[in-house]
Length: 98
Image 1 (cartoon, rainbow, N blue to C red):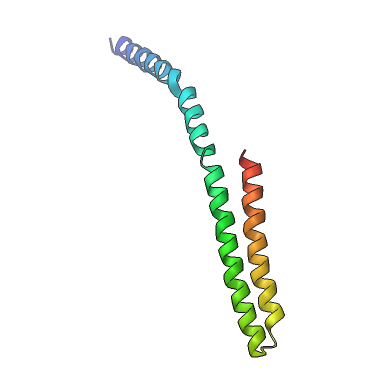
Image 2 (tube, rainbow, N blue to C red):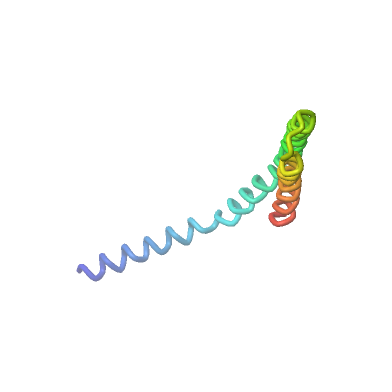
């Protein structure tokens, strides 16, 4: 009797998991389209952040240059590198995921 109950329970579980898989592919496709729809606004946001960082860096480098600080080239290189990194990272992530 316990074997029959165990077999019946196993069949019910197998049938319910088969019914549950029917809509899984549609859910994955919908999630993929939702995630990829965010890439254009996020890429534009990262470009805007890079522009603001570049402006702030330009003002800071100008301030150091005007005051005669000998460390101006190092500061300019670090700010410029940060802007280039933001632009390249946004472009590579977009091309990698799309």
